[in-house]
Image 1 (tube, rainbow, N blue to C red):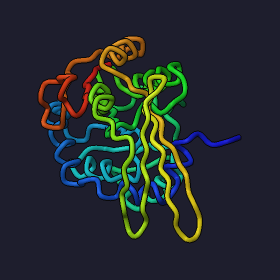
Image 2: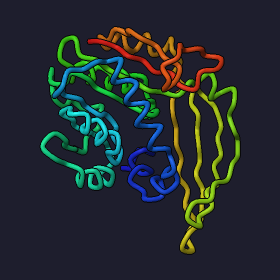
Image 3: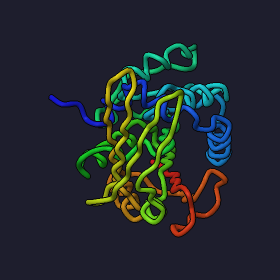
Length: 242
């Protein structure tokens, strides 16, 4: 059976090469700002859902939390396990499947690591699993792009050169999704990958969260935790409670 696009692309070393220059300092500051809002006590249990190679899980663990990182990519989890210690562990896992029940004080899903599935039922299933992961009263942080702005400012073609490889990036919007194709050539071979993300807007999340048993408490428009404005905000960050 053909792999889903995210399993294939996220397991590729070229995915991490293309996105390697994401600013670590900005990412850590974003996490620190959100932690101030959550005000979790020391030793709280946190699930980093779709943790990638574990850099944000590692940063959370450095705050003294008990952190578990999950990701669907075997390659990412294999890499992340070098950071494991007594309060940081990693597992390969699909968020559409149950994990630990009534276990975590908080679940976090950073940097648009949601919206990848083919059906609304799968997205809802993932959110229902988040609710199951949480202890009663636990918090969920979802950090998504602002779909309104994505549609407004789409760049249909761009090139990015990284370590001698020229990546050609093309974006289109159709059927409520943004599609990105990634084409490049290296070692005499041509490669082609695609990304597909559902353009969820605030009203969509409000409906999904309610159906999953998650109550939205705060809505932010960026990592500086400014008020969300669909016309100008770069992000859509939701803090919800079970």
